[in-house]
Image (tube, rainbow, N blue to C red):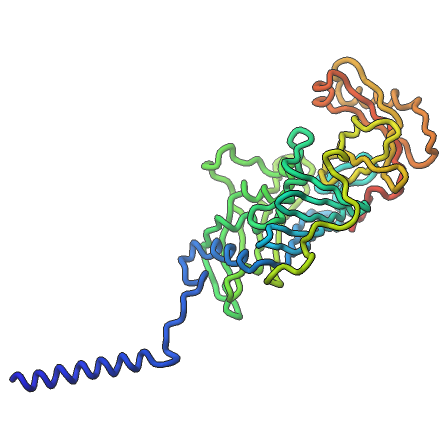
Length: 404
């Protein structure tokens, strides 16, 4: 009995060794785990964002579209991200249809000291030390450093700084905490994810002053709010190539605000051209650079005879940039008049400022005369108001009607 069992056992061992040898043959090795797709679904978008940054750099294109029954306003942001160097450069362009509501246009682009609205075109570069901004009508860059908060929390320049990439205001900012609810395969080996993110995070995509026009946000993070639907596409290499968000839930349709006529709001981000950053793609800009700390001032602080530009990148009309009068400029200060007493209300303050500036001499003999007056907050803080008299000296200094 011993010998037959021994022979049977030997045969079984030989068969097992033969099968093992066949399994370990060439071409049958198990594939390596994918750095994104092999992980739990809930983590895949977060890992794809990390993998995208590891690519070194990427081309950027994002459109944000406000839609109303009377037209559209579309912002196109194009540029280059240098993830490794924590730098980026981009150009922002707004295209508004002629019939887009005026109040909404002024809210989205910002208002200035002259006719029309704020920047339709602007360029900027961002690094760990500074933000350089150049308005489409300017021949120079403004350099903003450190924490930029010149007036009561108005800080649209810091909004250009991102956390997930150097450039802020893109959908990359909301992807880190996204937990996908579903996934489907795409042609070419990639995947598309369906997810959502909190409304409070969606607000971070917009400048500070514009956020107040959207729906009220919960006072505390644990309170529920409407989710923002999102789709994310990831290529076969695990890099994010596209993200689309329906931001319509941000629109507050129960109020009569400037955006009350908006019917839809969408954002669409595309990343491509991955790889090492191209030389000079996100470098500090060449040309004339003005230090914003000394060049930017409230218009009420500008001295008579000084020339100024209205476009500062701050989206706040009381701020202007001091520029030499020998070169192109948007306006020139003629006089500053004190307005004594307590704040009389906006209408009376306007009347008093108009009277104060009516007798101001204008030796420039060019452009149209304008005046402005202190807000209630500035009036109260100063102890008196101030009327600023100036002339808008450059035709077309601010865009009107259709902007592009």
